Amino acid sequence: MRALTVIPGKKESLLLREVAEPAPGQGPVLVETLAVGLCGTDMEIVEAQYGQAPPGQDFLVLGHENLGRVREAPSGSGLAEGDLVVGIVRRPDPVPCKACAAGEWDMCRNSQYTEHGIKGLDGFARERWRAEPEAMVKLDAGLAAVGVLLEPTTIVAKAWE
Image (cartoon, rainbow, N blue to C red; front, side):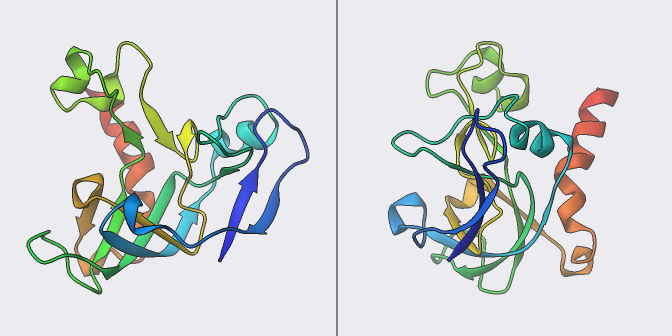
């Protein structure tokens, strides 16, 4: 499948490349990407200002702003084939700080988190991805035209807090 990638720290490395299909071990929910947004963060990664590839990989799949459609989901997950979802960008520190332990991963105090398409996890700018049900937000079907804007909207909401 195709994915939009960069080699972190290397300018002019943006490439649409073939990557492996997501392995079932990456999560029981299979999602087909419908849309991704590209923002200033992505441009800074493309310009080699920062970004970190997943362990054992020299490239990073971009795309933290995303919208997808569930293609496979286990029963009891709260998700079904056809549901619209947005993948949660930041994943908590495995040894949680106070904020991570409280479910406020975006306020992590010790910087040991990972972020899809930014730090240590491939992003959503690929044809398909997998994750745990709790690593995505289900959207009402009426939000299909604007769902890709959920992640940037959360940034504004946090600023108000």
